[in-house]
Length: 382
Ligand SMILES: [Zn+2]
Image 1 (cartoon, rainbow, N blue to C red):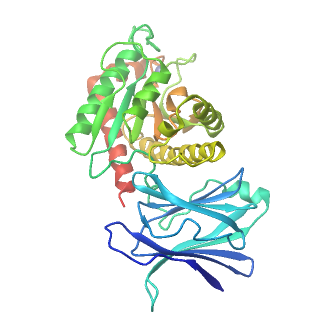
Image 2 (image 1 turned 180 degrees about the vertical axis):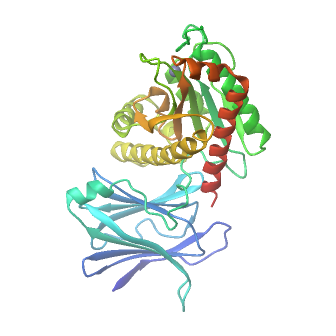
Image 3 (image 1 turned 90 degrees about the horizontal axis):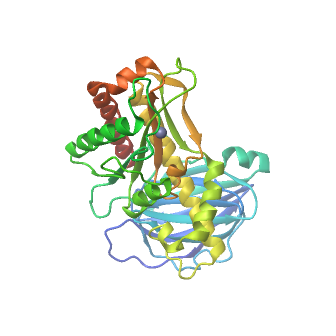
């Protein structure tokens, strides 16, 4: 049995509208329903400490009262909604205990009902929750994650920030013949910028245009302040074993990201951290939660993008085993920008150093990255 809680009357708006919300209990399940004006994409995931279910939609017109769900129902103890970032509307369900998303789907209009978003939740053990935590449930599993932070506004082209590793007093790794990482990374970044701009789809900015030292922290803030939709840090590593070769792609590891999110929250003006959230009437605890959510979102997007990069790079260069890795790179710690770090190869390996010196190989690497970027943004179109 479902119970209607509240609804505003319809008006006129270009955005998809939410006109009703209700929750009900059926056997062991708690069902959550939103009435929608049209078919939309969504993404659902769960979070712990405290237990929450998060649903992301494209930007929507919320015609609901803030107290629309009242005291909640069944497993749902509370309910918040609103614009999360430009382009993303978010629903947060507070659940008192570990839950799993059994089903999340969209119903087409039937009878007097319009489109409906339906979510079925079930209580699970802590262990079962841990397994599914953070894993996104989407209507189409093949589609990439829905947009998170810094999506282009009003048809503006997405901004891609390219970060040529090292520079100035910090040469990075070097080959035996003296080829410097900082030079390789800057040249590939410049080539990549040209190719990306040539598509007409993106704006591109470099964290450095010349041989200059830039602290890691500053690289991150350049990307965040510029409102990057994607951040790509370029490197070419060295290894004690000269036989080691192959490219690899890194994302931020989750553990480090939590700590970083906390540090960021304490240090910076919280309004700046996640664009589009109104913190004026939220308490610090909630603010931290929102930062946590944003970082999880951009992590999911980073993982998506990293997978695409691995696929495309694998066509033009050798990859190391377990090529997609994660670690606590400071340069990847923007909480709201999907970020990856690409190690294009090992300068300590003679064959790879020769390749990395080669102009056409550098162009091939840049070309592979363009393809991955294209696929990433194709997957995010609503
Ligand atoms: Zn490096």
